[in-house]
Image (tube, rainbow, N blue to C red):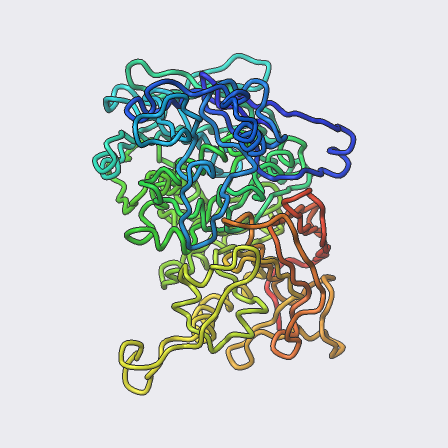
Length: 627
C-alpha cells in the first residue's frame, strides 16, 4: 500500500505488484503503509532550505540506499516528491513497549523529511510541522447501529466561535452531498503547553441506511478552513438484513512496521469486516513527544479509520498516561455523540492530558456512551449494537459498583432474538494461561508498563513484594497478587457473564494470543472446564456451557517482529485445563457472526495476513448459562 495525505488530506493509492497473489494470500512484507503528508512542512528555524526529493536526497549512493530501504517497496513512491512522510519499513524501529526511542527516521513524533540545508548543528533528517487549517487524524467512531461520529483535528490560529461549527458534507455514493454541522472542543491545556492550537471536532452522521456506501468530507468552521479530501465508508449492517456481521478485533497497537493497520484497511475495503474494535493501549504512548506521538499514530491510522468505523476501548497505557486516563477520555468523544448529544461540549468534564486522549474519549462519550440502549454517560465503558452482535466495552482499571450495575442493566436490555451474539471486551483478560500460572505475581507490576517489555510476545511477571511499603494493612504484609486482583474482578463480573449468557469475552494486554475452551467459573474453584450433562469436560464449541475467553493482545506493539508461532500445547495443563491455543507475534482477530447460531473466530497474522488459527462456535440457545 501507499497512502498519501495530500493537499486536501489523504489520497489512498494501492500499489498491487501481484494482484492475484495479494488477493489469494494477502501476502506482504510489512503490515503498515507509507504515509505521505503534503500539509506538513519543515521547521524554517531548523531547515534553512527545503525538503530534498526523496529519490535524490544525496549524491552519496550509500545515503540514498539507506533512505530507499525505509519505504514499503524499498524505494520512495513515485509521487512522494519532497513531501514530509512516515515511511513504512522504519515505522517504530528500535522501539519496545515501555521504552522511548525517538530517532526521527522511525517517525516517533510524526512525519519528517531530509532537509537539503539544515541549520548549524542540525541533522538532515528533521521532523515537520502541521498546517493550521487542514483536517488531520480523521476517524469514524461507531455510536450506534445507524450512527457514526467523524472526529478530526485542526490547528487553526484562532478558536472558531459558536457560530462557526465544524462542517461535513455527506451523502450516498453517487448522489449529492448534504451539509451537517458538529461541535468543536478547544484542548486548552495542551495548546498552552505546546504553543500549537488543538481543536477537536466531532460531527454526527445519523440515520444511515444499513450496508450502504457513503462519501463525506470535513472541515473546521474557522475562517480560512480547508475541506478535506472526499472519503468513503460503508455503514454498518442491520440484524434484520439477514447478512453476516464481521469485525476486526485486537488490543495493544502502535505505529510499528508489523502492525495491523494495512490488513484492517484491506479487510474493510474488501468487505471481510465492517468495523474495528481496539481493546486498549493506543499509540504507545498517547502523550509522548509532547503529544506528537499520538498525532503520528492517528495520522498513520487515518487511511484505515476514515474508511472503517472503529470502537476504541480503554487500556492501561491510557490509564497510566500523565494524570490517569485523561487523554483517552477526550479522544473518544464520538462514541457517545448520539441521543441528545449534538452540543453541550463545554459541560463535559475532561481529564485528558494529551490531544489524542482528548479526541478519542470525547468521541466515545458522545457516541455509544450516550447513544446505547442503556447509556453509560461515560467513555470508560459503553455498549453498541451492530448487526447480529451486541458489544459491551469495560474498564477493568476501575471496575466499580456503578460500572457493574450499568453492565447488568445493559445486558438485560439485549434482545437476543434480534441481536443473538453478546461479546464483552476489556483491555485486561480474565482468563489467560500465563496469568493463571503466575497467580502469586505482583498485580501492580502486571498492570503497569514496565512488565510489558517483551514486545514480541507474552508478559513479564515478578513475585508479589512484601514489606512496609507494600503492606495493605494488618494481616496483609504483601502487595496484592495477580490471582487476588482477578478474583476480586471475577467476584463482581463473572456472575453477570453467567446470568446473561455472554458468548465471547475478548481482551488484550498480554502481548500474545490465547484462546480457551468454554470456561465455567465459581468463587470456590475459579476457572474450570465446563462439565457436560454426561459428566465429560467440554473441549468443543458446540452449545458452549460458559463464555469463550480470548486474548488477542498484540495488534502491533512497538518493536514487534514479523514472525509468529502457534501451539496447541499450553504450558501448564494442570493450572489451565481450559487453555486451547497459544501464539506469539503481531496479529488480530476476525469475528464473523453468520447467523443466530454460527460464529467464526479467525486469528490473522499481521505480516502476510495468513489465518493461522480458527474455530467455530455453534449456539442454538442464547441465554443464561446454567453451570
